[in-house]
Amino acid sequence: MDVIIVNDNIEGCKLGAKIIADIVRRKNNAVLGLATGKTPIPLYDELVRLHNNESLDFSNVTSFNLDEYYKVPFTNEGSYHYFMNHHLFSKINIKKENTHVPNGMVDDVERECIEYEESIKKHGGIDIQLLGIGRDGHIGFNEPSCSLASRTRLEALMEDTREANISDFGKLELVPYYAITMGVGTIMEAKEIVLLAFGESKQDAVKGLVEGAISSMCPASILQMHPNVKIIIDNVAAKKLTKVDFYKAKFKITRL
Ligand code: GLP
Image (cartoon, rainbow, N blue to C red; front, top):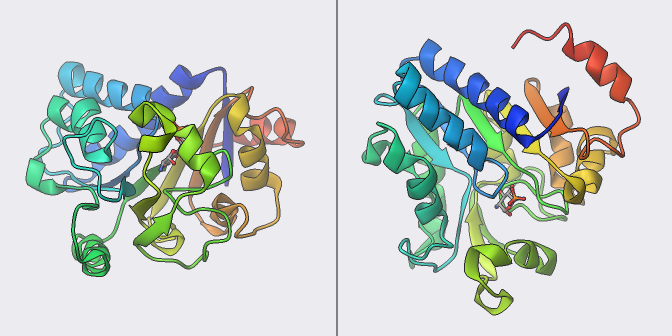
């Protein structure tokens, strides 16, 4: 696990975008795992800038999103379909048919989840998975106590997560209680993972993720078992970490 401590979210998101752009340039048909939330928005802005100004080409790229709210129409501004179209897909030359976001509107959820997993496999797996982290240590919508081997499925959202996501829907009563999410086991199969976390509200989650014991009570902590993970955090999110000097020294010899 490489812990990369930056000054602020903009610096961190530019670095994250560079890591993703390098893969898109290097591998003609890269498969990207994408995330939603406020955290990665500047990263998507930077990918759009690289597309417009530096000819970053997404025409052969395939994407799979982590999650989607259950029974929220794609036209709802809180849905992750809407989010991805708004922040990224409509602004770059990715083919619509190459983008995948779990469909929370289906009746047969189990089948949707199985097909999502199969589709990831059919495309050769995810080359790089982008992640944010919830205040309670969740990744995707894998909430504390979930199986660390879980696959794509319907998951219930914790109250704290619903409250954290009020801004997507305007008020708590409108925030869904369920979502379809890639499982922790699904995420762990990505060849490379980049997780972004910034600000005070993520300090405890980052502490659990980087220096805590591996536990389903902090699902992100399983990333300690992944061979190729970069955790990009700002000084504020890093506040509760005890080995900051070591992480900074190690970063000096990390090739990005
Ligand atoms: C939601 C998403 C996660 C995201 C988290 C944090 O729960 N399902 O993928 O990491 O929110 O969001 P934010 O970046 O807005 O703090």
